[in-house]
Length: 361
Image 1 (cartoon, rainbow, N blue to C red):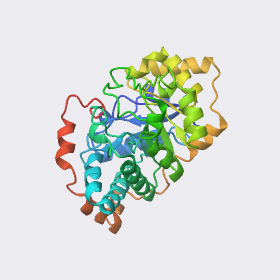
Image 2 (tube, rainbow, N blue to C red):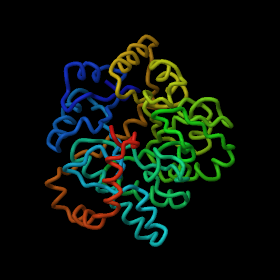
Image 3 (tube, rainbow, N blue to C red):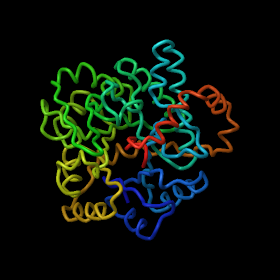
Image 4 (cartoon, helix red, strand yellow):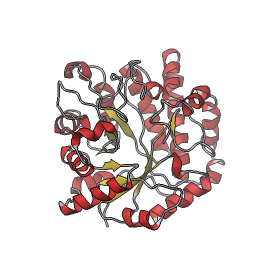
């Protein structure tokens, strides 16, 4: 059975019969994990093994694990710095910042791969305009060159450990103050202004071989009346045709308020896929997930062959070393030593911030 175009979540730390039924549906292609799905490294490995056993090829297993306030697994994992800390270092020591960004990417991916996770939705390519609370220190920098430099280094570290990369939130979420988890943000800038700043990291990272992109639930009315994730202009004309990106396009979570303009859960999923997303995320709502699967089945939805081919590239490199093996590898030991303490205070602060809507799940 080939992978389908829908990525779902599961409520708990083990699979229930309901989870198995849902994840075995032919329209499902992946699972995204959250903080609630984690209690320990051993439990996580058991969960990912159970998910992998359901299908051949196995479902893509993903997580938002960026570092800083958005790191789903903490106890038993290396606490990674907010990306802004690397940006601060880049201002004074760009060569050292690039080296540490690569080491952060390597540690992030190596630990996830050791626990059966294929992919993290990272790096954040948004520019830090100082306006967006939901982006904030998740962004590397306000300078597109710095963002590109550091994101490319982090991507190379992910690749070193056998993991792809997903840049977000196309074409840029950093300028707007509204949080798309809770509101429908509007970015009223001209396309030329976005192109000359926010699009630069996405354009360059596409050239560097970035394997995935996640669009923003933000409306840019000067370009289209629909949020970027539902916009053929943004996804097909700009991202695919103009920027030349040929990787996987993931919708952001369709349960977010920023996606509500597209209608019911089924209408949201259909709109995202028709606009050009290869895979649509439906999270934190089992009833909505069932409705989407039923609705797309009724429409006789089929995943295009080109999307299936793109998805196949995102499975993590096989035969990843386990944690015992990792701890015996000089590269891993050195990387841990090099990144120790970077931004540790910031990461802990954001983990307890109630306004941290993205980091609390």
